[in-house]
Image (cartoon, rainbow, N blue to C red; front, side, top):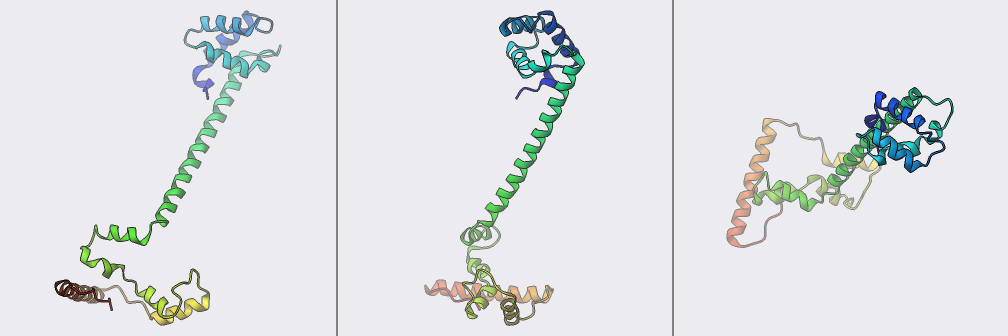
Length: 199
């Protein structure tokens, strides 16, 4: 889309309108007018002049048309075009954010293990992939549920108990649990037996 305000400033629009009147554009052929106007305005290509005439021929043909009126029309056209481009860019940006958020939600649990390996040793994958919450759902025969009602959530919270407070003692106990798990796994690897379950 051609930005007429950028290509036709106030002085240039006055010269264009004067040339339009001078060559009696209402009776002359369009090709003749385009050639004459583009010759007098060397910085404007014939295609630009032709498109401008075709877009605003109805206004230019009016007896009461003026150069100020043409400049006002071009200015309004530019403002509307700028607002449309800004709105389109904003909508595109919002769509990109929605798409990126949707892509993050679709990451599978298997891919999450790959990200874990960037921050932990491979021996710890099963330890950190283990979920006590999932174990609780399985024990309550609710592992296949996609949604839970309020009463079901109440039963789940009662089964899980009160959450632990994040403290130095909690971190110490979790670290000891991890060290015990590593020792058991290493022993199992040496004995070439199956990895133990996490408890």
